[in-house]
Image (tube, rainbow, N blue to C red; front, side):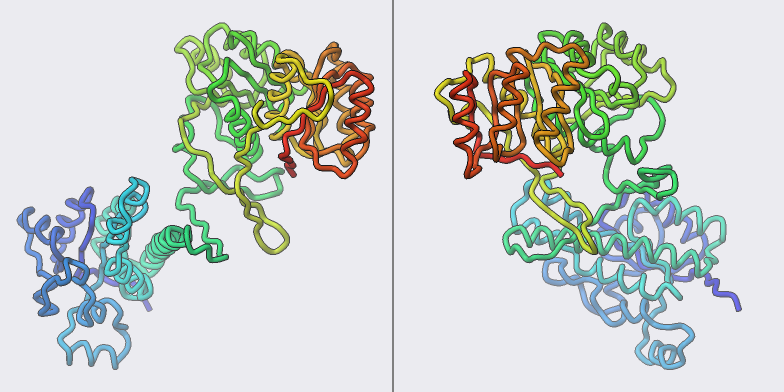
Length: 510
């Protein structure tokens, strides 16, 4: 038995009329009876097409300032009746309820209204009641009704009714029902999150309507997806599609470079979410060359990011390196043309987009949520812990190192000299191991660590780290402090001409 149904009637009530005209004309050409309300009714009438006002069906006008237009048994009965149910068919006749086969409705723009900074009252008025009810009713009864709930689906619906002459299969109706519940659930989540800002109800509602299937996840045997509006943050100028791992590295790069947003030319190279090279200089070319010098081996296949426009001179040097992604606020015309010389190299222009203020990650059978780490250590935050204070140059380097340390996997140690990352120890189970890793790496790339500074993401419970660092040439240290044995490290520094400052803020990154 066929589950196809031919459209004979439609209820159309939309906020946005864009793209609606060809649908209305096609429905009219197929002899479909059209019901409508308010502005949509006028829009259809102005097209010279006959339309039946909903008020003629319900015998009620639009009331309460438009808050109630379609909320009536004759409207919802027309949508929710089961056409193969004898009782429903009988009641439809008894109460003179017209059959409705199509519901085309969109919702008041609640999210856009809130985002615009509108008043509470204006935002509340954009909470749709009739529209959301129509969507839910029509989607629920997809066995008999097709629901078109977004302007984004107009083109597909028009193609469908044109190609099939209005005779639609149940699979078509069910697909549109899924789209409708996607719209309604996202809408309700946005409203809940708006109200929950003050109420602080311990519930998590996350909804992303933009999404794409990735080639795979971290490894080829894992499926991967990205949900979010990538285009709101970047313009992709060139290159292949970003992978799951690319996206993680891009995220790490953008968050790291946000620390240097308004600073002098700064360039970073990241690998596996950690900086392997970073430098700040008078020119971007110098910054790139010194960032690359930090670890030219790890830079291979890395993600590169600049805090300023990439010029032709810098692009010429970048072009010599195999790298996956290059990110910048802009590229000069010559730089863009040169960097496009590698077919798969991804070029991203970073827009002035706001980073998320909360972070989420799966944990056990649930989700961990926390505030984004928005604290950046400054000179004003530092408290001299030792008899000797760092010099101005050392203090500049200490803050520079602290910014990198904040975005490096714990346990971490970062070594900096002259606003250049010499090396870091990343993700070690022991802070001593992290320090030894950093020293070994810096020395392997011929860095002179005499006069360098050290940053740690957490306190030192023992003086071993400052002793190892001193012996490697480190002259100043920045750390949060807070250990019951802080004095042991302080005493060592006082006895060995090393300055140390506390920030009072720990920067674990797991």
